[in-house]
Image (cartoon, rainbow, N blue to C red; front, side, top):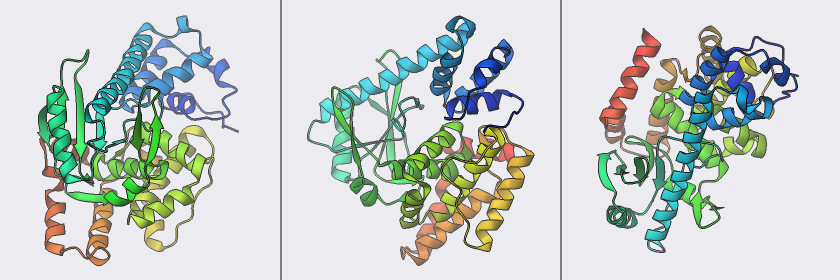
Length: 357
């Protein structure tokens, strides 16, 4: 059973977006004021779980009781989700059989609405052909990353950005093998057309890598997706995939964070069973996380500064000793990683302000 805890804005969001024993929420929501609802709405928006928050809210409240600003935001999010589907349909029709591409992160759950559309094309010749095709569709290059390009199109009802990658990496640091994620892809039927997406295990690894190596934060959308995948396929299967990709430490850090947040915000243990930690270092990381989360849990959650550093070092060690990469080249990539773009620099600066000040 869910413990009877004070219904703070972040608890309200979390308990609505996660399938819990929510029998008492209808009664409790009757006494929820407009201010708390608006605060919860703002948290759900910042954490990229606005639609699941809104959909669950409508199960427990009359539409007229939901502030109009929340209803308007929901309509915007639904329109953007439909726009992303239209973008993918236009692109699929344009490339036809010429280019095989995979949609990553963008469609990881039916109610997820991200900031852009993310595509992965592992073959270099097809990657360059794909960019030419998008140019003919009216896209123009608006930015470059280490392994990819950002294109924008501005004649839809809303501007659309499309990130196209040749490698799955955090800047210069590849954290998922291109051949393995491509081999494990799945087909998704979107009624009028079909596209390739990663398997749930690899989609979760993408989420983990993005959270730890790029954003340095865990969002409630990451949290929700981890609960979903581990409940469906079991954390053991995801762990096996993480082990193949030399992402064991990143997986442990991320999943321990999910466990502790679940316990604090939902009042019970995760539904898929906790995993054990095999050595002293892993247990030490978990203690650091436990103490930090207990002392200052806000969502999105900013990892303690030591955690991303050690996760990066783990990738560095694995690259040298297991992938036999040249230490000098690998170290150079690590040092350049946060400074690939202005956006990357701003993420790093804002993160450092948050965890240090």
